[in-house]
Length: 443
Ligand code: MG
Image (cartoon, rainbow, N blue to C red; front, side, top):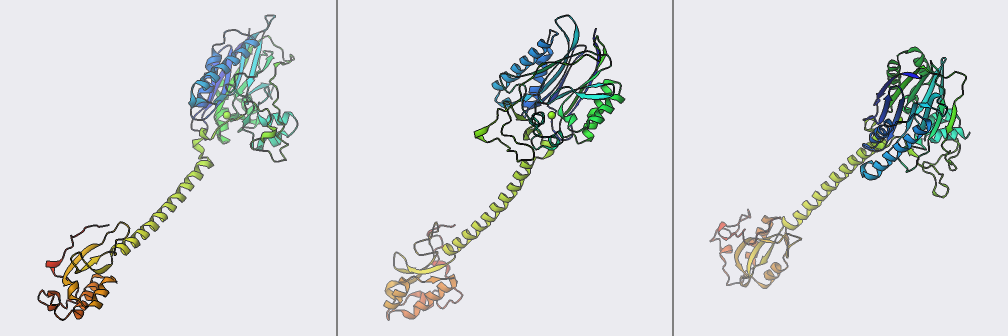
């Protein structure tokens, strides 16, 4: 009779905002870790949904465990296709379960999809039991890059297989003898990307209590950087019929992806494979998306902010230029004067431009008592050319000068001094003749 003692720990880590990992401990028979991926809520939902589905596993056989994972795939895929917000979500899944073979012999069944891992710790030695369904591990398995190159490979976050992204999923599965004293570690990549295998082994040797061991491994991963969610489930085999000399039997292995376009790590690797030789990286997806890491201020966001400042400065400069242009136009259209005859042929000082300028219509500043008939022909001509007067004072001087060009019989009060405006060099018009409100258009 196989008996276990298990402990577990999970943590968001130091860079991510949410924990998209999930773990399952159905004590005495089933243990699992799932590492979800997908923007917003996707990753959390995928990993939780997969393990919820797996927890319903009733039968204890290796085939049942694989079926359970296939059903979990269905559940995640269905949910993903029903909810646009969750589209494209997926999860890894590593599971260890108590199983009984055809002869009624108890053993351990293990199944894996993705790049979470199972390790076995036996006699002080740590052994990785699963193969990562990741691009770099496939390249290592195919002898195209070395294990050392894989550690720093720019595409080490690409996984080639995940649960929930396709209607079908291929599952790796194994059968192992249940050997008393063996310790299994199920974990997400947040652990082994931060903690060296030797340190993991030393911790599993040192920390006897499985909960304690799991918590210490999580702490070490955070100490190492904590760049991803970290989940560890430690399962001790207390009792079981297996012997240490019994082999591990591989039951099913997912097919290797065709990595045709991915050259050795020493050659440039395309970020996106060229269309004409796209490899069959079915289900390949990064194990995290930009949305997953608000804690780390992704480069993209920094760039957006810089761009916004640049745009802001540009807009301010543009507004300043526009204001200058408007001020110049207003000045040109409104802050000048001219002298003309009004409808009843009176000499009139007008503010603005003859005929108006843009939206600025000219407005009457002052109607004088000089009429067209009072003026000699040359003076009439001078008025008719409507010369610009830079200021109101200039316009008044122009009008005063007209008094020098009167016909012999003309005696307008403007020029006789009877209304007090003649020779008015200050340019201040008489209030009685002022008609500032004649036509009112102000800018
Ligand atoms: Mg992860």
